[in-house]
Image (cartoon, rainbow, N blue to C red; front, side):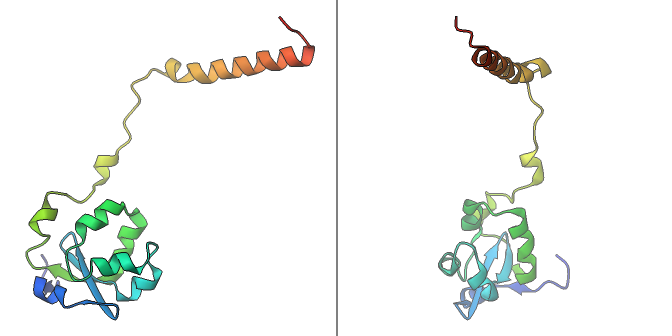
Length: 135
């Protein structure tokens, strides 16, 4: 940790639970989200339910976008003393490597087969309809 980071104890975090002063910790970082209550897309109740404590599990369960994660920086207050609680340490922060797109196991021909069949069938049906040919 760098010297400029403020260390917030669990006791201090627990004092900030009102709508006028609401803090929570996510991945060992403490955020003052008081000014965000009215803007939260999920409503203010979900934030109030996790006020004053480590909300990492709840944060992960929702599956926030990258934009939402980036937005948190403006509300940063300091580091939670001792980092994230033990129950949240088992769940590491999502990393881009976990979501890498894997190359397809199929050959190029196999991936093209179904679209080609659909196109051919569409052309045959159109030909039959336009020319009035019935089998």
